[in-house]
Amino acid sequence: MKKTISVLLAAVLLFSLAACGSAAQTQPASQQTQESVAETAALYPTEEASAQEAAVTDEVSEESGREILVLFFSRTGEQYNVGVIEKGNTAIVAEMIAEATGADLYEVLPVDDHYPTTYKELTDVGLQEQRDGARPAYAGELPDFENYGTIFIGAPVWWGDWPMIMYTVFESTPLSGKTLIPFSTHAGSGLSGFDRSLAAAFPECTIAKGLAIAGTDAQNNPDKVRVTVTSWLSELGL
Image (cartoon, rainbow, N blue to C red):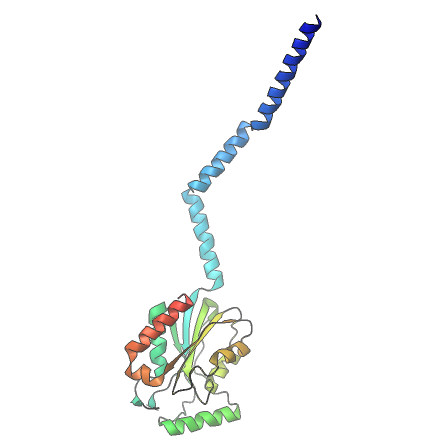
């Protein structure tokens, strides 16, 4: 009798353990189905899910302003060591950048174009404007910068600095959160701190590595300049 009871108790105990093990390892059918659907959706996204992801990406791109602008000031007439030119040195480089990146172009023009077309007189006027802290007015309206996330800004170096008309642009332009990329054309002075000046004018912007091109190269060696511009843009990831 005792042996029979012991056998029965053992059987009950084994049945209970098996039931517990099964419950721990087996999930409800509804949960299994939900997880299977989720895994399948992750591996094979539906057209609707893909469209939603694309819409989110487009929205982020729009909000971050991924379009590119090339903003520049340039001069024709007599320039250092290249004689009288019909297209400005900076304009040549600006067009190369725009062509390579698909960017929009905007040339800053003065309202009162009093700048001489002879080199010596032009440098004299540029120096006097710098000494006076002049802010020459620009013509027309600037682009809507809200449309752009990256802005190339270029000009010839005048007395180791931006031409004063560019400071007029800087001081009337809200560019918070943009990526600004300076470039210059010069007669031996390189970038001349264009990047530092931009950082001071726009502390809430990202200032990327700039590019300096000799004016003589812009006029006489465009193929060389194009290679330099392409390499620079590649370094910038553009």
